[in-house]
Image 1 (cartoon, rainbow, N blue to C red):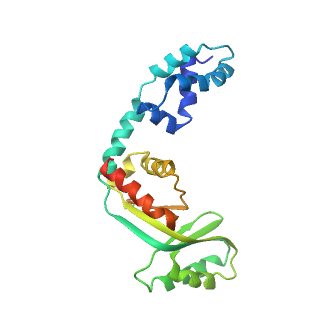
Image 2 (cartoon, rainbow, N blue to C red):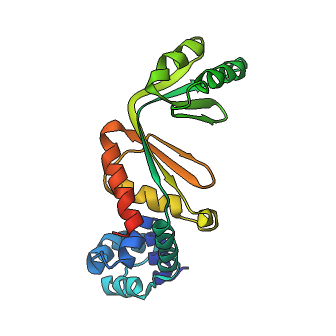
Image 3 (tube, rainbow, N blue to C red):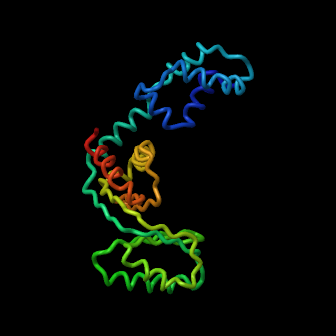
Length: 220
């Protein structure tokens, strides 16, 4: 049977937000112990004193979370330029045998415009295009016979240039998305390459998203 300490740590580790808040001393330990008490007793199969849970929580060390946070914070300070694009639309179509040729036609037509935003995300069963609004009619025309699964307008994006070391440190995307989530920003799409990370949000949220990312870069 697992010890009270092990059960407590496992429960807390289910919520990365909670573990990080504990690392930053933002959690009332006694209140957390009361909240976990019933679940710990169910898992332990016996009554557990609240004081024992408090002691188990206090014995938990920042460890990996603290070291990882330092590494990620250093990476955030080395973020490159940010690029904001507005007036975007998101199209998601169901994949089909005839889809590839249509896709090539779209790319060829959009490539004629050097000042445009265009990304393609191909999944197993569906493909998403994110394009500047001036190409909305082009997408609709080329894929008029394809099955449209969703179409979202009034979008914007923020692209962040990441330092090359980002591929060697896990948790960077989570760190960025966590801060956006804490501020109530809904992510419509995520697009990434080795050294670029793009979040697509509603047009009304882009200024706030940009501000949050700038704060991460400055370490605020």
